[in-house]
Image 1 (tube, rainbow, N blue to C red):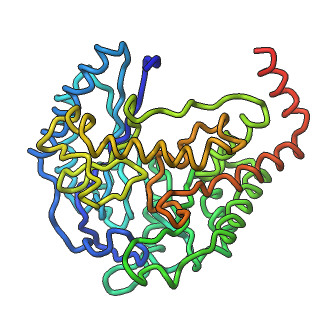
Image 2 (cartoon, rainbow, N blue to C red; image 1 turned 30 degrees about the vertical axis):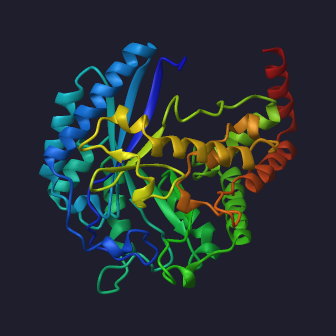
Length: 385
């Protein structure tokens, strides 16, 4: 790579155990499983990543930064000392060789003093799952968790913790996206909306499914709310990326080139047992695991036949979806190449489809009509650059 700095996200499924039973959770069958990664396993992962990227940086003249995203289940079901210990191991192993950051994705229902302090000084950022409306994020007794989570969220915000949120769009809240938006706008919190996707468990999500038309309408409404407001610096994800693509398209500017996974893999998901998966391929299916990070070197996994199959599938998705897309130059293909398979529809033949394209088209026309002078200025700047 030509870049002197490159980032990889390591999504760490530290345990599937969870105190909630959210009705759309794709890990639902395993939420009672208490198995968790051990300190020894995590040390093996850190050492393997350090050795691989230190050698790669020396070879390429680049500098790698690793972003660890602690996931579950509910990762805060692990005690605070577990994370303090592994983060200390991480600092010792990577040292000054590889830059690291750590975030955690939590339902924020377990918040004692020790964990509160951990979120404040142990992690670089905290992601909170909160639908605001819907009643689907329930405990084992079926009681809704939203009120408690909202109170804990306000406590973290008041303490100055860096927080972002995720809300799943379901049939329960798809007609109330304005209320969802206002909840986060009032707190000046960046958030992401994640349309409900099929978990693979027969009938699990059927009562809560949304249509493609409902998803499109909700995203358009959220974009309009953001454009009309002046509080949030950026629109809720994935609209923030869609707006950037639309703006580049209007300016005639190129976005990031499509990155061959063989050259650089931006995201890898590590399952609780150490099995690794690339985004876009079937997570949890052992035939799609590129290897085990606890027992194999990272380089061996990237040189293996399953990783090659994953790279070919990513290229196939881009070829089928992107090469004829008017926004390809402004986008680069990551919307279908590097998005988790469960979050996309398919064409009936196993190929994932880009659900962002119609929203980007709407945004491009909306921006063109709202700020024609700015669009003209963008075009002039890029024409003379």
